[in-house]
Length: 139
Ligand SMILES: [Zn+2]
Ligand SMILES: [Zn+2]
Image (cartoon, rainbow, N blue to C red; front, side):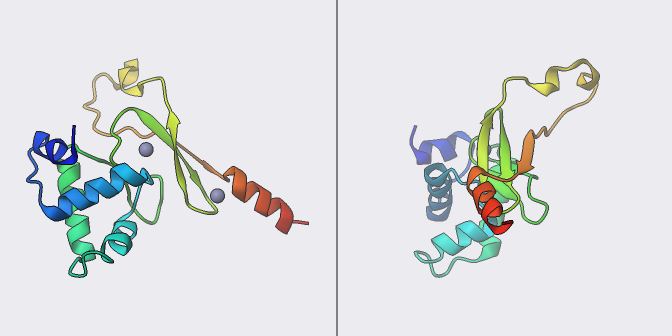
């Protein structure tokens, strides 16, 4: 399925900017923030504003095309992969990795009476690169 069809399937009009943003997310798989997308795409689209990027993410979110991650206390990150998976975020460099998750927690007994809308699986700490750097600086 191409990007235009992906948008249309979710009832989203495939405007140039929406295509660009989704294309960015699918190509990078880097769980971008509004700023990350803005910095990159404004090189190509000088009229772009942060608000427009923010509004586009919100539209994608409403239509179930992306998920919003609460893993970072400061900024929201967005993920175009809405399948069941978790994330690891490095406290030092801020990069986010995907983690495979096998258990769907929404199926556990205690949650059955609730209407679950969001479940996030995440771990935080130091990535392998930053562990090396820290070891050097602690000497
Ligand atoms: Zn790191
Ligand atoms: Zn992800």
